[in-house]
Image 1: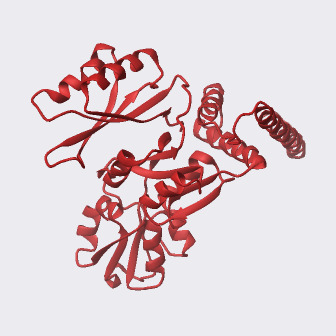
Image 2: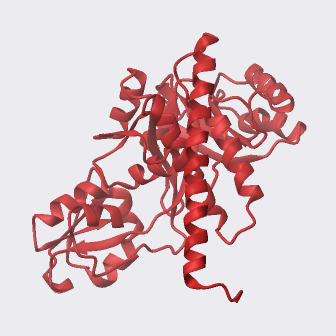
Length: 360
């Protein structure tokens, strides 16, 4: 205790707030000057730079000494950058809709709230919207810690010209939302297929007789449950709040550490930041030792592989392609050399994107 009076402390806070306001607006003006300088130099009108944003967020996170958490500081600065960018033009960001989905939460976590959100029906629609230029960026789910890969996203990455330009990792909390007065009144449960799978054990224990109905999203599940007092939805807090559904049973997912990784899609890969990840798809004719031979350059250059996932190839029966995540950027010297050697061995090698690793 300093002995300072309450009125004095409040007056000091008011002064700090005034200075924060002045500095935030000064930053906004500086950001506008950067945009004007780029335009004068003939650069494109896309003022969003994923690599630059990641560098800023890591710098303020590393400089943080509290008492605010690193996560809180990162979120504050992301919103400041989002608002500054929107002064030029709000980014159009497509995501798996409707509003209230986990994918929308991931989009807002990555881009901040000063974007123009474009909720779309289906992963295909998100890819098409960005490919056609209706949105600068798209956000889609790719991997859940409980249920594994979202295969539809992998298949579209194989055929799409889009690049992965970022990633978002989010803890996923699934809630039972319903207007039913008791669990015994629930006859059907709506959710996305992933939501139903992530809560399988809870449903078997508490609602074994209820029909499970897969729909396009957890938000759509909440909308349907809001119209039927004998139904429930497995959905996020945001979806339940949007459709004014009570949540009698929160956090019903089977895994306490349930999380989902989302990809940010765009048309150009960001430049290296020093803390990057590269995703690629690779294939080789089916023969003994084929995959081991493909991966040998990674070991030779001491490169770290964080994910390896196989999918049936569209080219033929019993043929497979492999989706790989690597630490590093495709322009990093060792990774560039390794990819060059792998290209010589592969029947297919497509770099899906090099992008900054997720910043919490």
